[in-house]
Image (cartoon, rainbow, N blue to C red):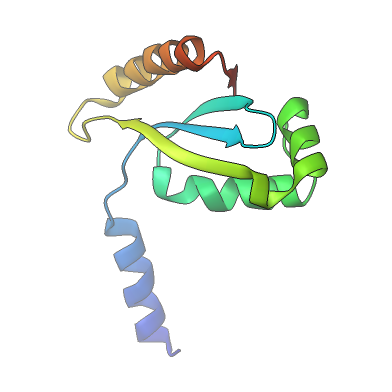
Length: 111
């Protein structure tokens, strides 16, 4: 890849739309749930798989379940997204409120 192509790829990455929202992970072997929020839901699967695979995830319960049951026992799903046109302070507040709601609804641990 030459320098101009690289610049074009970087520019395209910076201009892409991101979707913030709430996601849930479930261990199908145990039925346990974990709920988190992300400013960019498209990157969360890669982030979780990397940190869990390396044994670096900060949530000890999720990490233990991963070590015990492995990748095949986990499902990740988007629970809801938020409007991208909201001001950042409103979006942050809404994400916090919706995270609390989904943790209670699923009886899940917060990530």
